[in-house]
Image (cartoon, rainbow, N blue to C red; front, side):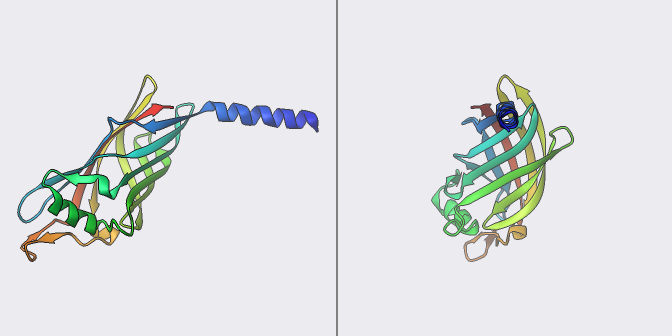
Amino acid sequence: MKKTLVFLSFLLGFWAIAQDTYELAPESALFIHGTSTAHDWTVKAQKMQGSLLLDTETIKEIAFEVQVADIQSERGGAMDKKMHAALKKEAHPKVQFLCKEVQKDDLVLIGRLRIAGVDQEVELDADRTFDKGTVHFKGEKELVLQDFDMKPPSAMFGQIVVGDTIQVQFDLVFTKK
């Protein structure tokens, strides 16, 4: 019995050592591009949090989130207020992505994306590189606001309306803890 416990402890310890945890680096970026009846627009996530679990160069899990309040435009408070309302900031203060499956040599991330309290299964095509203790993902994903039960924001009594389709551009850098 003692030998079995020692052996199991050794295996569990080895397994824990073989997994590396990475966290999202400050140089990471996330932009959301969209259109409206008046002009194209871009907003940026000012702060993000995330982690990545790597097991001998195999990605096991990626978790990523941004506070809705940290998604801001260059156009100022009025646009931010409408965008935050569309994202249902008060009831659902975070946008979250949890990847549990990686396919095609780490180029397709399959996971659950939660926006405005609605979960959708998504596939993200990404370029991935490993370099000196970092894992870097870069890609884009087109999303439809109504798929997340979001009503496209409007202004000037409905004269300006945001398009229902947005383009999310991500450049995520994870560094080893």
